Length: 389
Image (cartoon, rainbow, N blue to C red; front, side):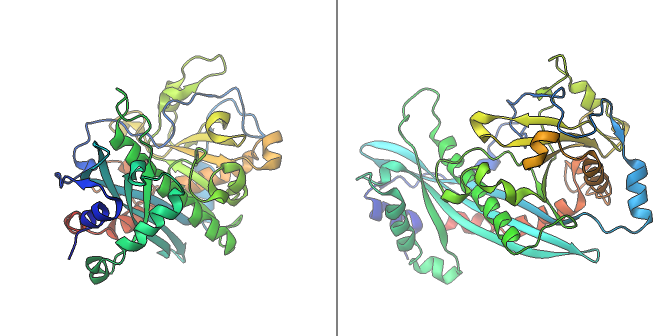
């Protein structure tokens, strides 16, 4: 039975080199990966809430009160998206050699009812990133690569294993040969964009099915700062078009760039987050980036879940929270009482911990950890996946 790269080689008239296959996760150099845009700058002088507080707010009394009266948690749904990407080959077109990158994408949403977590919905998608040169004629990429996906899924091996590929995604080669251009990064980037579109699609489905509301928020693991997409579904490309899907969605980032925060005078203010007392939140800052996010504005704040005396760094135990501002909130800010209620609910999600299971334990919310673990459990093993090629 022909392997995937043999089919791709034949169908696109390229030359496969059958090079060494590996996971990008296994060769990465030590670095800090932020959930948000590490280059953004946010000033607290641009208040994003109605109360205009100037100091951290203690939420322990409200968090305890919610638990003592048996109030149902505000957070009902938890969404996590992740990807595993692999270098699977090199292929030549017109005497130029390009990397071939494959990815497994998992998007999962779990819901909590009566203190029990269960699956709400899940996508597992297999995708392949090829250079745009694979389409020699250069016309109608969508139709061309869709036809190749269909051909790929006729493979006896994939049918035997009950697997299929969702898409072949072309990446641009227009800057191939430039000193700063890493084609591997471009290939991984289009797979990342595909994953983000799948996250947006799942949120749109939850809204359409009337799952979300003022008593049933969705907590998304990671940032909501989706940049404008150049490809994919037209109705999901910009935040402006899907903003109202996010009325009852908050984003919580376990890692963030503390250097992006400036005080009202414009000076760096990362110590404000580092010195945040346990169970307190910062005031809400207003954030926008018209170049990348269009005219959508965010309310952004930070909450300390753990005492910094019991963590390794001053920023362990702090999470960044985002909420997209809806129409009236752009003018007046988000209601401070709503911010307090969301924040108190997040504090109450801090236990139990996943200490010893995940190095980010101090920043994890347990339902998010369970959702993330569920998504990762659905991946095909690396050995089986690479064997397909």
